[in-house]
Length: 284
Image (cartoon, rainbow, N blue to C red):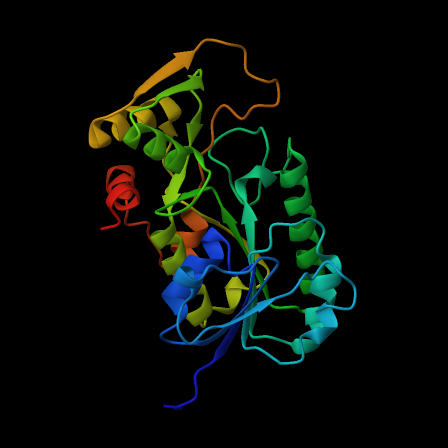
């Protein structure tokens, strides 16, 4: 076995998903992170090279000189075709692109990778644009892309997101006002996502290349049920559900079909919503 570690570049490595992927990969790989934001000292991983660089600026992308075995794209800004084109010359073993369920839009559940996408938000539309551009690079140049389409990711220290917001407000014994509560989402803990990305990197299955993979639990949880779970566990706070009409573009139901991920990766989500909320509140 070689004593040299393979290298990974994480684009957007200071965000919630990027940080957690780095944390899960750092023991086995030599990792570098490029991000728009400076990472906080207490959130740095030892042995990881962090670089602050705005890749939206034309000349900054050229400052990346090194070849990497794997590239993971967690960038959240829009229309990254210039960045993708730049990495064509590096010929990584895999280019893993983090997409989102917003690419599907308002369609029938469960959402399948083969479904026609009808995104209802600008963010979902821009993510779909990136997905289609990368798949064209695979088709035309055999660029080794794998699209990881995530659903509702959550976990400890996430920041402003529905689960972390409800937990934070309940801990402060606040009253929280939420609309309706009947909407469902497919919540997937960050630890399960990290394991899936690890498997994608290690996999020798060539059928992964050029594929979109839904990574989530394949289960729906309503916002009302989610709120009650958090209230029971925190034992503080109060949540009011306000009756009002939802926006016509609101996604009422969201659930992933994860059969393809199970088949190609032999991956299964391990953390259900009850265990995931415990991990989010207590971190263990």
